[in-house]
Image 1 (cartoon, helix red, strand yellow):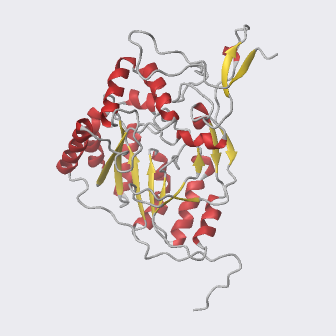
Image 2 (image 1 turned 180 degrees about the vertical axis):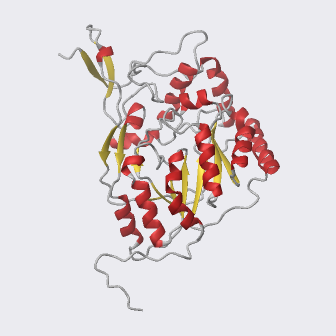
Image 3 (image 1 turned 90 degrees about the vertical axis):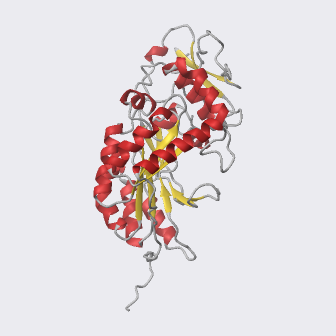
Length: 386
């Protein structure tokens, strides 16, 4: 018998309360992971995905040896998807196609709304999401094949809208760079979202594409507080590094946007104006924001993190969230899910607009073009002589 065994349960052993029970400490879930094992990670726990028939929880059977379990290490597996362009018909976002070179994200941002997608592959949206990663090494080749397909009509491809294409493993894998090389050859427009300074590695490609109105980059700056950033986004680039990335991209002539995302009431909403000011002085010409989203498992993961790191703000944060979400923790309605509703949401939006107006942000919107698109030659296709 294993000293530290995992007991399979049909349901998680403890339900998170909708509100903290007065002075009672936040319940210690059986799925919670020891701090030393998850050092440098964002999530506090690793509960089974919602599609699993059983929930596995760490349970000490009397030998008191849970502390002997190894720490979570980043592992990378191959994603064998046959297509790389994902389609959507959401009416409240400005693109209908995207690419995600990676599943999971080592940045470990506790609020990441992409966490629930890890349940699709039988993994936890908790610690598994930031430590068990899947990579699509064939993404550039698959992309070239899809762009060459009969009937393909070009429109901007968004990259980084789910997981970050410039997360740490991109340094070695270079999948994102391969994708950009394909897009540049094909003259295809791309919009990139990241919170990593690693994007500056590809300035050489992005500059050439930007000169033809084929590329733009958005950097997410959630906070300027280094302690909050380290706790909330443990393996993402520091705020100064992101601002420096904005400066380098802007100086190179690449259209650059700052995203204040997510805005979390009573945690980082007071920084909206300062973030916009810092980004504008770094060279950003456009700005946007997104209110905190807590779909599915993200809600409980965020609750655990908030109680572990900012217990004094827990009640206030969730009261304000519900005020902006129609009394719920999350409202997924198109048109309101990004900005929220109610007086508090209106005030955040107005503060953002006033700050942008004072700083001259969003005076002009960069527009990408499909005029340069040329289908890649398919294997075996004869080149034209003229």
